[in-house]
Amino acid sequence: MFRYIAFSWNVADEAQANAAKRLQLALDIDERWNSVLQAPGHCVYMSGSRPGVNDAYRLLPAAIYVIALISGRLAADVRTLLASKVEQRLSANLHQRFFAHLQRLPMAYLVNQRGGELLHSVELAAASARSISSHLTTSIAPVLIELALMTVILAQLDEPRLVALFVATAVLYLAVFVRGIQRQLPAIAALSTASLEVQAQLNDGIAHAETLRCFGAADQAQTSLQSALSLLVQRWTGFHRLAAQNALAASMVLALTLMASFAITIDAVAKGSMTVGGFVLASVYMLQTVRPLESMGISARELSRALGFMQPVLKILAEPPETQASAQTPAPVACSSPCNPPPIRFENLHFCYVPGRPVIQSLDLDIPAGRTTAIVGRSGSGKSSLARLLMRLYRPQAGRILVDGRPIEAFAMAELRAMVALVPQDAGLLHATVAGNIALGVPAATRQDVETAATRAQIHQAIAALPMGYDSMLGERGQTLSGGERQRLAIARALLRRPSIYVLDEPTSMLDSKTEDAVLRSLRALTAGCTTLFIAHRLSTVMHADQIVVLEDGRVRERGRHDELLARQGLYAQLWRQQTGRSE
Image 1 (cartoon, rainbow, N blue to C red):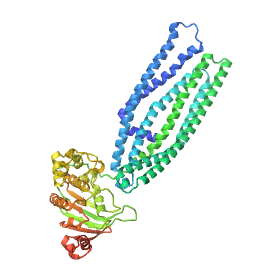
Image 2: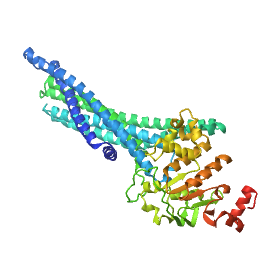
Image 3: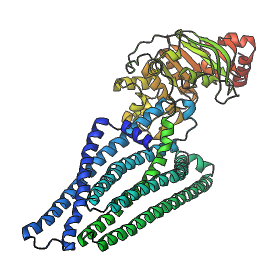
Image 4: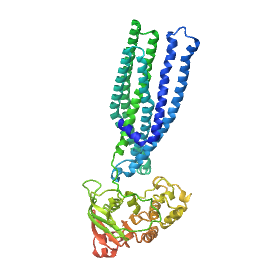
């Protein structure tokens, strides 16, 4: 719990949160004190121990009661307003911190996570943060204040046994409170895991609805979801069973306390050390301890559940982020940045996604500045992995990558990625406008800049034909566009950045022959003078490259120009004959 409290106060805006909580605590004291003051008004009249008091003085307790009732109600309303503001700010800051941390985590970690689980875990954590903040400030702290006030008042009755009983009850109830949380945390962890699994399966079902329907697997997915839901119900049942057991233990403590308090007060009245009015007053206050202690019991259950639901997010936030260089982060990319091409060197590189299964082995490769180097080879030879390593999406297990003679780790992440524009095989499009997708990462781009980049990528006419043109909203992952249109949109996005390094990972694999020829001609013209890494499966798309590198099993097998490699009659010539049926 203390770990969460420190985390919450770090996430929230400290000045605003602390000011609001101080005022809220003052209001809580006022409200709790008013509830304490309400009892004497009743007791004065019930006990009949104040005969002969004139009517004006008789009205004083009633006046105090009315004032206490009104101010207590107002304090509760103001407290709710302040608490809701702090809780919403806490939730917003938690979402922001979680998202920012995800962006800094290594891709090797993220690719093993399920999007549905991540999304649901942060939603659970945000709700839990609000719940914990609410219970700490509007339940537990006020209850402790009320109990302290009752202790002071009971001490005035000259019956030390009642004070001792009251303190013992509070200590025993606190022990039950803490023990209840300890027992429920493992059950909540299992419940959280089951809940995340359900949400992940729902997310997969929505994201891959087309695939499930095409392969007739909807019933299979439904069965899997039903199993996950059954497990979730079991976890909830187990949690509520523990909660009921803890509530029963707390009720037994309260019942024993009330029985003991009645025995003490009756004995005191019988011995003459306490008046009937004192008996009524003591009884009322002991009965009134039930409400705050029961409130604390409810808070215990809610806190244990909230703390359990916080664990997945706390675990993710504890993951170390990618190593950042100490270099100063440059200004945002401007679409007018000049092309200043650097050379690239891959030096004794070794990389694997899964330990023991190398994708790149002892690779040495020089990419000349301002030239186009094509990387070709069979599937699985390590072509796309080179692009990911250059973008620092992954870190090699051995060796290093130099850009302009500097290790890429010496660049700030933003600086490196401002130098490089990547066109991946699968264009990652956002649920945003067409213009917003093209201008991603280039906030200074004008509409004219966007349209020029789209024209050069041979996608302008297709965009203009959309209902709202460049302001048309794309569906999630750009599903409203064809594969070729998504690919050309990704090319336009890269061209708009005007970087010094282009990494083109099969950028035309989804285009028809006519469109591909037009796009390739445009790319050759626009990337002239820039360092370009062109990854291709179809060799016809890289015939004009300044250098062609052939990879096999993560190693450089051949390198040279198109004509030179054909003349050697090696692996490149073999691949060329397989694809074209020609020897030249």
